[in-house]
Length: 236
View 1 (tube, rainbow, N blue to C red):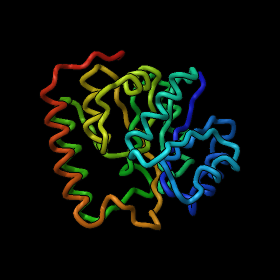
View 2: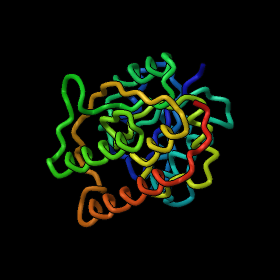
View 3: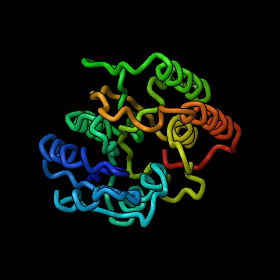
């Protein structure tokens, strides 16, 4: 069963070549798709020179739209499953193997848990509190433990890929704990494996200014909506 690695990228030129080189070393032969989300810094050209598949958005549509583009690409071209990782260099490509193994065991949605194993992820306490909150809420809604509900390092079975690719209401902003809840309520099997995280040299853009406040508010609303909506039909 062929796997597609989907990497959303927006203005990641300084880091993208290194990320792709790391993937090539850790997972030789793995099909890689970079979804360039309207970058203005040559990210798509760097991906093309690296010899990977590239899809470009004409302008910036956001992280969630880039992911769904990747899911649709995988579905339309017959890839059996997807692994997704970020382009900023935080996700260690060496952890791809653990995600693939979990998919091989029949897990539908594999969450790369950043807090397990050696080199555990240590975000600032304010972010850690938010992560714990959403993990608790997701666990409560699903009646099943979820320990890292905001990880972007994930593996998706073919059923989950189709479920997301065909969704007309895929979240426009933050597909995090809300999407995990949606998958769980649709009957997909969710599992977690330890993944290694690196420091983000840029510090990220989501966690500056008022963006953290907006994120918390929007995620709480999104989780409330997922908890109250009719149980979606999945493939699990």
